[in-house]
Length: 180
Image (cartoon, rainbow, N blue to C red; front, top):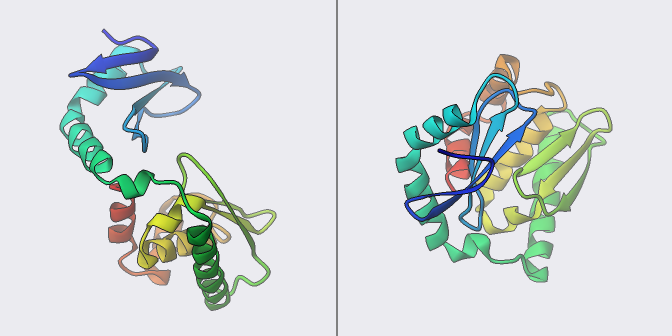
């Protein structure tokens, strides 16, 4: 029986937290720790545990793949940061013009769970420093994704339809990025 805090399944640590969220969330951190978030309302810890156990094969495989790839967990060097800033400057500028979104500022910072974020009111996009480890096409997907939030601030049907127009094949790129 799970409780909030750290639990173990087959020797793998699982951190269980209750949050103000709508759905049960499952995430594997870059350090290999499995994070299970359970809503305060609408779900119990037992339901969260059942959800985790139904996804356990995926958890074990994904965690093993992440831990086997030390480059994904390596810190970003100053050289990598400069290279990423150059790449983002190019991609962000080119896509902002192509999509008719001028005057969009951008920044770079370390983020634990997001590849990017968009403040559509301030017209500012923040990119995750860990994108320095990723190939150009995945960085480009994140740029287009965040710039699309300037028109549609959520991930609903209108957002997906606009992404289909702007970057056909984006779903495959998103899948690759999620399985890193």
